[in-house]
Image (tube, rainbow, N blue to C red; front, side, top):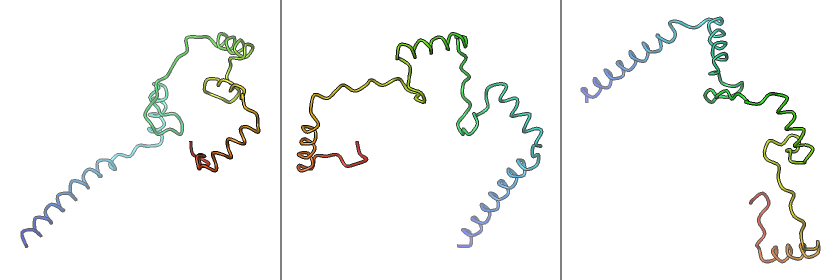
Length: 126
């Protein structure tokens, strides 16, 4: 029993020594505000800085092969022919659903029948 206590004490002491030395290395040379700002400025210049508010790694910088005028002309054309995304929408324009071939009364009757049979999807589920 005493051997076990002595061994456990030695292991705990060794862990404490290594942990404190590792911590001391980090705390020995804290960076100044100017050093941190310089590192950040360098990372932004190189394109390796995280975007503001993002926790993931650096993102690749994508350069466009079109000029601003070309992009504006394409957008103007897309708005004219109706293929542009609605304002505020980032995904592709969605197709307008086709007109139903059922009357409102028919749809209501089908819904009532499905409700009686317990076949309706609960609200909030797909």
